[in-house]
Image 1 (cartoon, rainbow, N blue to C red):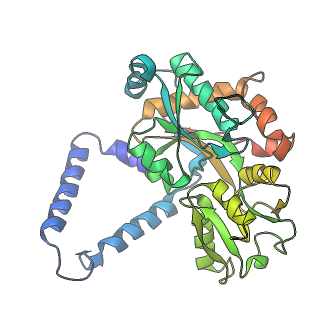
Image 2: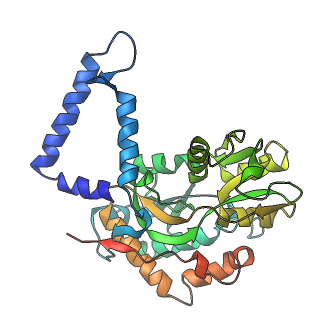
Image 3: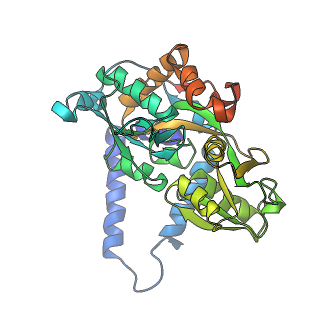
Length: 345
């Protein structure tokens, strides 16, 4: 949460000064465009400067899943705006998936409306009940993987609850709640495939990932470092993770890399595929919100505390209902770490 602490330190005249510097730089670039080649500042390209900044931010980031704002039940400006919505619009607007089996999906057997169901959806209803007093006071917006952050930043949703991994790159753009689920990247491939896991058996194979996913970021980094065979083709990316399963079924991809929790659900949908090897990362899902929505982050964190304690209708009950069939009855390996809350002042 280095970025959040830095933003806090820039309040007042410090923030004004920082904004003035930014504005000055914007004006400079607008007026001093070179005739050819990349824009530069002191001989360094703007693109390179941004890349170095991003890499430095990731180097400074440690265990982002353990750092979040302390829980609170207080209503701040963000929550008041949600509560002040009138009539039919008085709902929590949430970005979700509608294609992830047992996480966020439309059950064709639930009636004519085919309502959204799943582990993530249960959590959304709990948040809506706490904030608005009605678990059904939700406007769901189905968004693809690569649109999760733009949807938050653009104000199209109040939050995203969509198997979204907390990582160092994303905390530069959005705020996260405490983590609510632990998983890891896994390889999914046909049972008849010679692929054995995340290893040399992926050489020459076509791997499908979702655009903007941590899976793709991991593959790209590992290919660059040599941990993934150079001949592995990672160019196949799709808007939604379920599209990868379709590509696999059509023979347009040899394997899928995604979160193990999602891979297990996809294997449950198609008995001809299976998880190969073991998970090769440790990742944690969080509820994503706008960077400056501190009151909403704190409120969601309080809800998560209560949700975990509720043995009858909370986290464990939701796990048993939706995920135990694919991930096993023992939920301990899926339980997130205890958060390290930042100070309230």
